[in-house]
Length: 113
Figure 1 (cartoon, rainbow, N blue to C red):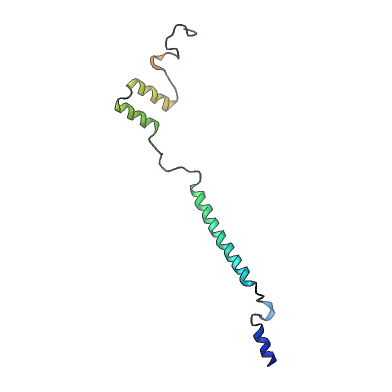
Figure 2: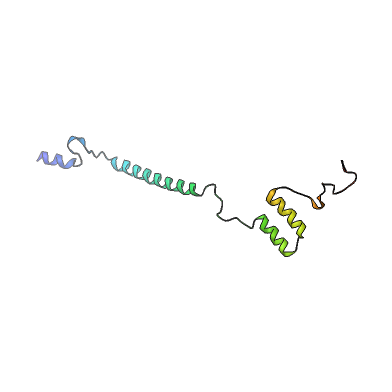
């Protein structure tokens, strides 16, 4: 009878110490489960953030400068000469002033003229 009561006191012990229930296994199991869940959430968050990080919207916020210029020309706000001049600046970056002269536009007291 004494041997039977000893077996009922420690039922979680197996032969060869393969598994011993010292009362902390549920704590470590819970901690490991929380770490696994946190790792999965972190990986998903980093992947989602990396997919959109540094990229702007797929479409521009408004019309481009050339579209705005074409609309102004179509509404009659600017004439043909001004449209061509501004379009040249936008597309090539070069600027030829009206009248084909320099910044003084024909002033006689400008240097060299």
